[in-house]
Length: 390
Image 1 (cartoon, rainbow, N blue to C red):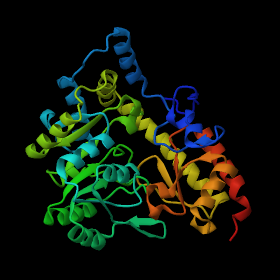
Image 2 (image 1 turned 45 degrees about the vertical axis):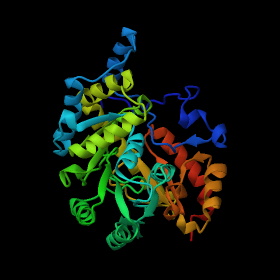
Image 3 (image 1 turned 90 degrees about the horizontal axis):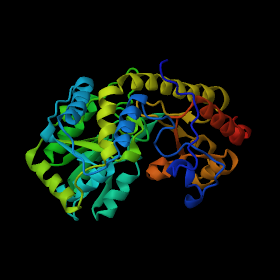
Image 4 (image 1 turned 30 degrees about the horizontal axis):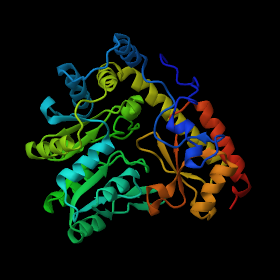
């Protein structure tokens, strides 16, 4: 391949949250960190060239985006997902979680319910509670390694819990589901019939695996708020930039008003440069990265099948975050976490971070060189090998 994803980049002593804050999070510094969802690969070389050019210019004053920025963003989503959005319908924010917080404040009141589908990305819980809204949970059905939506529960809770907002995660983090058009249309009908606004977090949309298709919720419901960012796709999270698509004029005005109240205006100068460059020049790099990541997922799958068969990999339809079911070991979550940390020497995301429905699970980030994945799997086998037979 043109790009090399096998090279190990030393991220220690770079103030990396993933590598340098073990002590602050009461973890050992000797653990292999495969938790937080950033990648251990440098951003595309083409993006680095453009960011370095901006750095060499040497002035980091207030910066805004011109048409070339918006064209790069909107062309990406139209060419890949058939979603047509204009410049004036695009709102830039420093991140998707920040945007969700602004949306909660703009579109709901403290007495309103906000529904999410658990187990799910843990900042959803935090941002709902921190803004004083009522958290309503619609647990996904889990049956023989497959996740599906409990539509009856979803509709019932919307009707009885004063739900005004639904935060959809598609592709779903952590279970890896890529929701089908049929599923999305059914969710949308329930929401439309009950005057529930949909926020669709589509930050992982560029990582959908062979045999599956990402359906942008904006192509189903024009009044939905679609949240995207280049951060997962191109490993740009630290540059703090996201693009939020809001076609409804009234909703967009409310959303932008809430951002103004927060005191935020122009975005990170280098983030703007990186985002424009990534969506303009990063396609070939992403194509090769996805091939490599699918290889990592296959490596995990085959290893578990052959050497740790009681650990069940939930087949990911999307994302580079793999959801592992350890429930066959009959361990409490505390016992499971202890074994992962102290015996396997791994720092993963404990399943209950994503809600009580995550008991017995761990989430592992496979966006790293394959050699590191192989080492981690061997350490996992060492910690669990004495219990591999029922």
